[in-house]
Length: 457
Ligand SMILES: *Cc1c(COP(=O)(O)O)cnc(C)c1O
View 1 (cartoon, rainbow, N blue to C red):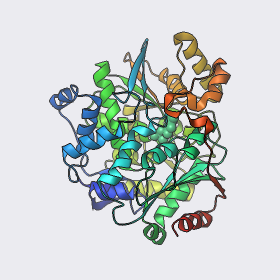
View 2 (view 1 turned 30 degrees about the vertical axis):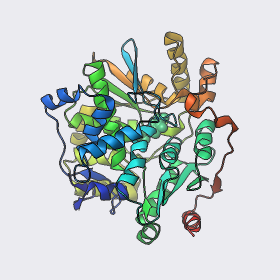
View 3 (view 1 turned 120 degrees about the vertical axis):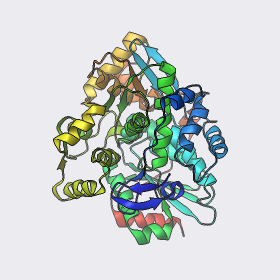
View 4 (view 1 turned 45 degrees about the vertical axis):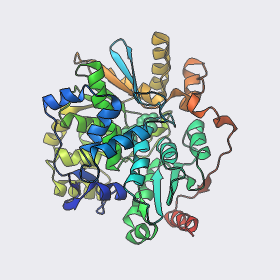
């Protein structure tokens, strides 16, 4: 399996190099050269596997050049040993909805599922064997802690986590700023998530800087994140033993894009339901064909406070019949005019797979309350947006809701909704007593670069 970029099809990279780089040199996203497709027989064989074995099969299919299946099995086993649940994810049924709890990892959000594997991939691929590498990652709240947990104390690896100052929940911040050791640097950037993501992309695009510090990235633009997330779509299909819709709280379009890839790989599936908050760029583009970022608004679902949805470019590449020229045109238009519009045929293709709905803060609160009153079960605000969006379609198929975070991470919002405290999960029992460590920096690229370089001296 070789990889090229959404903006340049003449590239021919192996898994190790796209893993190490994260973002393609042309600013595009790496993508496999030929689609992987399982036959019906292969899929029914996969259905007999445990979560860990299923994960090994799926991940292996994307990196055969660099690993044996045995290697991948070992990586997977090690990666999920810190999870609170043997099968990694837990599915609970509430009438027509199946809630897929993806938050049983060490930092209580679905980001752990891919990030723990990524941490071990750095070691197995010997990326930092003979040099110090610097991983710079932007977070809307959950990616940062997941990356820190996965990369803590790894030899020759520094991790710089940029979060938007005062724009994440107190528990998100506390987990992130207390669990790191000497190789971890937390930066609170005076800006929003898009500013953090933009800074990371600009550092990647600065060749001198990138090479000088051996920069690497683990944001959801990294293909390895996507392949780990494909696994639970398969797992749900097998556990529920029927075709279902999936409703997914969406920000950077990574998690739901993994569902799209699963469908392309042959998994029977209903619709993919994109749930957004009031930062509804994805709902707007999927409903109208116009992609137009506006100003980021702070909401009760901070992990989705995003307007520049990076992985959407991977979908564009696909629906444009793998045309790197078309993707380049759209991205140039975005840069010059601040928006682009899709052709009707392109939008129709997107609508075959996706529906989308924005859910505002008031409705999010109401959904948490209703869910609790109906089922006695507490969901987090992000998960609530997916529950809300799931009502958008009635195609007689059941719907699986991806529950992306533990409600404890957003206990303040839950308290508003149901006037109850969420009890502290076992993974973070010692959290309240720990001291936080982070630096506040201006949203200024040269300051950021200087900070990174200084820490390497
Ligand atoms: C990251 C995150 C999302 C959004 O996921 P994307 O892959 O960026 O679309 C949704 N919910 C929670 C809790 C998250 O941490």
